[in-house]
Amino acid sequence: MLSEVDRYIILSFAGLYATFMLLTKDLFVKYLASLYAVSFMMVYVSYYLEEVGFNPTFYNLMNVAGLVFLGFTFFENVKLIKKFKHLESKIYVDPLTGVKNRKFLEEIFELEVEKYKKFSKPFCLIFVDLNNFKKINDLFGHSVGDQVLKEVARKIVESVNSEKYVIRYGGDEFIVVSEASPEDLLRLVEKLGENLKITYEGIEVSAAIGSACFPKDGLELSELIKKADERMYKVKEFQKRLTQA
Image (cartoon, rainbow, N blue to C red; front, top):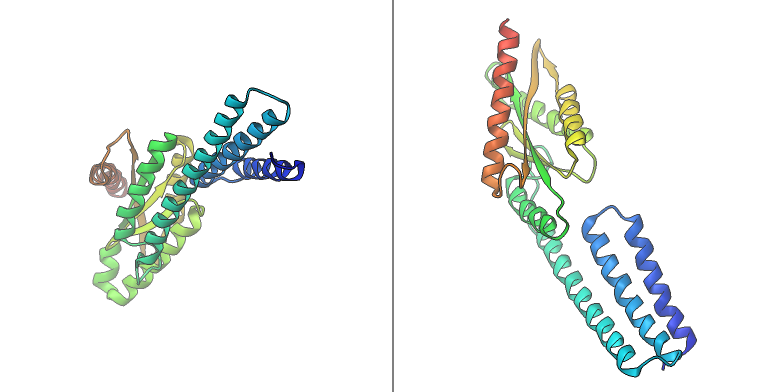
């Protein structure tokens, strides 16, 4: 039988993890904190039941279950740490713009799918393509075009919060991975459209934007990119008609 101090230390751990679970926004951290809280609470309850003279079989089973659950939580923790270290150990930064690169998109997609399986939390890809960027390159050269891309990347990063990932998909194409609700997603798309307007020597570079969400629009990364790309081109065609009118 544990001492009263030991039991209260176990209870304190349960309360600490429960508080952490309520305060954090990250779903994986919330998931692990809730597992730790339940584990320590089960262990505490088993010793409490022993103290009050409850059926020994029941509190022993409760104690074993709590310890097994704690072990499971530890291995879940280790597994997630390995996944994130794997992400950090590779080079996932686009050397020109400083945002994430295409390889990172493939990795984070797998992580977001796993998060969906655990928490049923959908996520979306926002596809951004630049209008008139080719004109900048053709008239002023690639060095100026590179500066414009850097500015665009900076504006995208400023337009989204830290819980979203900004990726340079290739050339003048960017992708934002977001867990925003449909209403927040619409506001974010509008915000990006407003912020991504850069004028250089009288030529305005703007953005055509399309989005696709998992699992509604597709279960594979290629499906989501294709759907977002199709919607982006519809926006681009609409923008062309407006400028020609």
